[in-house]
Image (cartoon, rainbow, N blue to C red; front, side, top):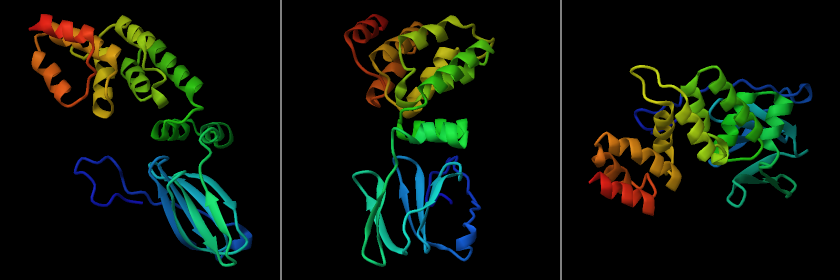
Length: 240
């Protein structure tokens, strides 16, 4: 797998993936593929009717099973589920999709791959990783890895750690000399990928205005990176 026509600063590296067919299908080979943008997965169907599901970012195999005794010779993306629809040689139409409620627990318990579970949960904003994320956040704080704690909180699936409690915990930890505060690292990660909610916008605006960097607030407003509120408008006015 490789990125075609990507950005110059893309972090995606070319993936060469090995996969193995069962003994009874040793001469099998792929016939169709469909990608899911929502889940970051690649569906591959083989001549013998086997389904492979790969994680595109890591190249890891998430699932493999036979779903048809006959060749599925053509397929298309199923827009309703971001899965695929296929037709086999006897005219059956088969639908394949990701079970949003079970894929993260499946990867965590069956595959026992925590990193993959978190990656898939973040990619699709899927449930099932809440306890895992909270444990990683608490562990990073306890060990003094505040940059990691900020990253875990900012990229938590569904924004489950984006709240007042997280902001207060990050505000309470010490800042290393010459380094940005964990809270500012948290906001920096969010600004790269999401729009700050009203609470986050206000908490970010306070130290920025105290440093006299009003232009930064105006820039983020123009880029729709922060959310306006009465408190932020009042704070911004006082900053003037």
